[in-house]
Image (cartoon, rainbow over all chains, first blue to last red; front, side):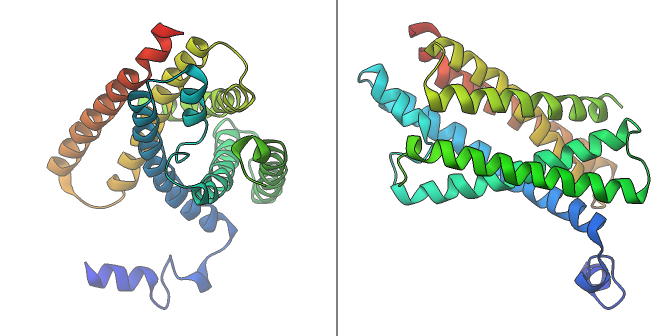
Length: 141
Length: 97
């Protein structure tokens, strides 16, 4: 086990940062971000259920609680929402790239890289728009 | 093969439904039952896509045929339980309105 890890991250290894190019970074971050998102979604579902169970007040209060999963914990958790936005945007856009070449569009290394960066740009712009229009709604300044 | 295919299909669907969910929830549009119902759909899609993804990552490691069977069953169980938990949580919103 430890030898496998050493070979993977060691000198000539596949997951050694020196040997990694854009494609395998995309693969790795897709995997890692996927797991992070799963953890977040489970926490989100639990938090929303708490908000729904615990609040017996008017509908508006309940919906306020639903708006931000960590609303009733602390305002600093807004940062988690923003970070998750970026992670989800990357995962989604890289996923679109994968679906594209699974269907045969943009096959070939050059097209891959172009498509990857275009979709990353889309992710950044979309995240920016969401933050710009959404932040006041979430209670940030 | 179907799991592979559904992973892609749920991926595309998730992007669309998540966008609608974020829009409706944050701008407070649409009735509460509609948003809650959409949340349930979103939850189902996300649980399938996410847990299948976790299965894929685990299967990258050599755990043997027995391990793969166990992992599939465990993730299926966790997924169904999470879905039921989510539906139970959103039920008052779907019914109450």
